[in-house]
Length: 222
Length: 346
Image 1 (cartoon, rainbow over the protein chains, first blue to last red):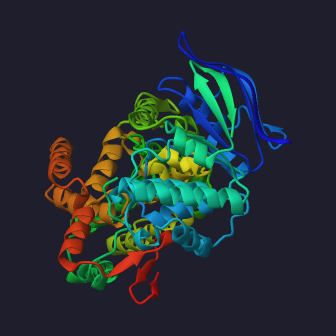
Image 2 (tube, chains in turn red, cyan):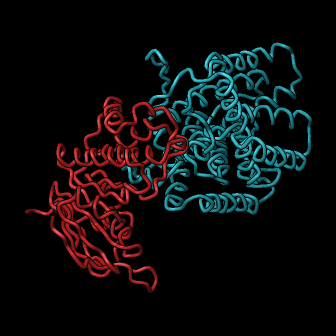
Image 3 (spheres, one colour):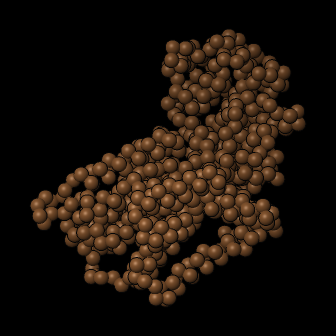
């Protein structure tokens, strides 16, 4: 199977502390992959490197056959890699529809007037009734939905989801799981889902990478 | 940013949305007809130009969240360019003004490029340093030495060569008022455009904006370029009105004044800084206070605003109107207001 995203020999240190040591992984188009590991194992650092927020000290990242190791976050978004943050950082002065609109107009095939897709996306993610609410006033569950809507706005080939299911009610978790399954099934979006919750990873992913002390120690096929 | 720009305005705010500015402009149009003292016409004329300058600060510091303490740099650069091009190079005034505005935009683009990778207080420090370098260079140098030479700084400065001798005070007044209206309209349009929305996103959360595909360095440069172009236009107007460019046009005091007007009026609202600049300038200048007393009063006004009305006058008024009036309309992407019946108000 051709890899959509591949990383070879990724290493990263902060000062003298090594965080990632020679990580190699690949994700095929449309493949749902989980990333599991204890706190401090380097999950978020790996996600930051794969999404373009941090450059690696060594190693290469390729996407769709192109090397993207030094490409920043915004350029990777326009290629079709969308990520969410473990702690959402919403725009305090923008409403929900404005926040989604900002992401929509930046995508590869953005139309000049992206209002209809904004409403469609807000409807899909259950945010339509909150569309005029300032992001700063959203509940944790709605913030996670907004993060997901923002990520879906780029018609992603790959979603990188950092702890998107943490601190959610059972209802919100169920809704987000359904949304993620639909994005994977209907739009063929691959995803790398970071989570501390093995049952959740098992129910959503076909493969789970286990990270410990900066190394992938196990790959579990489901 | 504490502004509530995307919250629905209440009925009171909605009813007077366009009425307040129209009423204000009407009063200002009628003011010269009351045969005021020439001194007051001059105070208002300067106030209009400073109000446009304050609004241009708001494009950078309010809408885009890039707190600049060197905004006098494009203002002063345009003022000097205008004076030098008309007096020394003999350029016609319109051409000199156009070149001065372009220079100010280029200066802004340069500042934006230098500050693109910085955030928060570091942008303020960088712009402060750049502004002070330009100001000190202007204060400490004499251009064309000799008894007939021009002085960059001090009392001398560079005189303007204008196609007219003495402009009638009321003509200057109306020209400055027209300039303020046109430039404020342009800045409002920009802040409510698609680019303005993205700049507000960058101001609110740069990392989320970048994760949404926004090339933030490019948009920061755009904010500085647009804000500086308008500051340059105000600087050109100022030097035409004052008759000469001096080092004061590059001073930190001027940048501080603009930032104060924006904070008092309501950051990111454009209209708020314009109103605050007009009221405060006319009040303090009209009382013929000394420059040091004016700086003291500006500083105290800023302190009171930050402590008790962090959203500024417009932000606080919007909060109040929203609480009193409840929900009437809601804002769609790009700043349009959608009413409950589905109709849209631009």
